Length: 499
Ligand SMILES: Nc1ncnc2c1ncn2[C@@H]1O[C@H](COP(=O)(O)OP(=O)(O)OP(=O)(O)O)[C@@H](O)[C@H]1O
Ligand SMILES: [Mg+2]
Image (cartoon, rainbow, N blue to C red; front, top):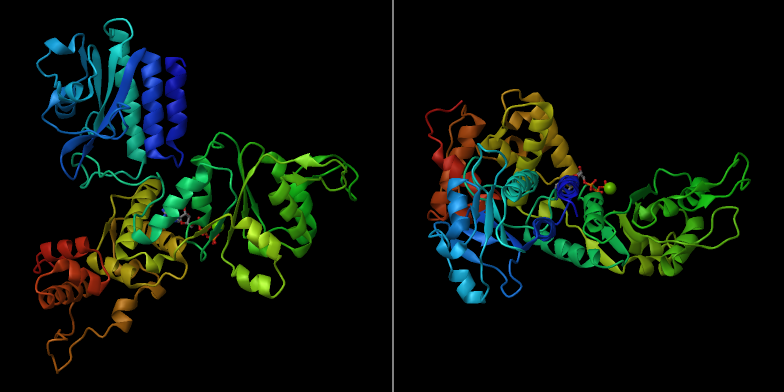
């Protein structure tokens, strides 16, 4: 692969919901090839521990390496942000031979470049190439690695890897999918099933309430599969009139019906080599269910009005928010089709069961996204807004949250997202929670004067809860259904400068 096409190829991957590890691994492999290096590796700065970790298995003999940031050439580059070219590692005093000793590998020539979003940003990691096929690397190699490292920096900027604090060093290393936010335990089985399903061509059935992310997860299966280079074609079974579904899916021959003046390919054919996503499968008209069964079972179909049986080269993903079991029981959905579809069944949990941390993480994610889109200043949630957010039950799930945050960002030119930006339905705290004074204040209640701002009420309520939990903020966060970070922030804000 030429150096230019390597760069273009990596750039084209940046916008996708890529598996980050797979992306970095591919980048390393291609980099080694393009530079005629024996090996290439990527180290990232781990924000939690402040050291360097190999995100990509550098050496087949070792899984994961971790080293303090003050050690070795990788550490030197991570600290200084310089690009370093070394012809003979053994004579360079910055070189740390520990890894070589452990693995028996002998490092001779090296090229190491810093990964960061821009020269003003902190270094997020380093990319290094080891042992040029014949002797040292040259100046051109050095320039190339610097450019590639800059691309990787921008790639990381697009992922859900984030520095623990904005502008701070390092990244919080976690998570398999870019563009999909949320690490709650409720979502773990979803992610692991998607990873497993993506490795095969098995049919996937995504189930879950409206707005839980089924469409997004269907794409994640596709972009993490070997079909990622092929098309991803969606058929929304609700928007198609019954008579049209068949020709939409399978296409038709010329003369198949009045007005069919030429042969038209269906979505199945359009999806060849890729993935066919049948959204709202529960709405599929009964007449078509048999034909779909055949497609799933034999990967075979006919165009409307055609006699030839065609082979379909597609992976099929279905999604529905319907209770299919009831549909089967009442006879509106074929039982054999139901069993065929659920080779890999993935139940996407509703947002309200994923915990308040997830709501907060998603809210911040959407706030940043829409602030960037609408040119608003960096968004900040007030504590009381966060409390309202996490108290809401989100019947419309992630989509409802996304819409709320989008509208709050638009309505707040200063970037401060307050409770009164919430839609009415998401303002439960003032209406439903009797925070205000009660005369019989005992261990289980507190007295609050009327006339306080909602922010102040929240703060005092949080303080009192933390006190009742003997200062255990994690327990208080649990009782209040808010993130521990919200508590920390609230307690850090001085009471006097209330708005
Ligand atoms: N975990 C997530 N991280 C980031 N964005 C998400 C996540 N889950 C959902 N979204 C976003 O929320 C919106 C709704 O998601 P999506 O359309 O995939 O839901 P759905 O389950 O297909 O809903 P429906 O059943 O109504 O079709 C989309 O804009 C999607 O990008
Ligand atoms: Mg959908």
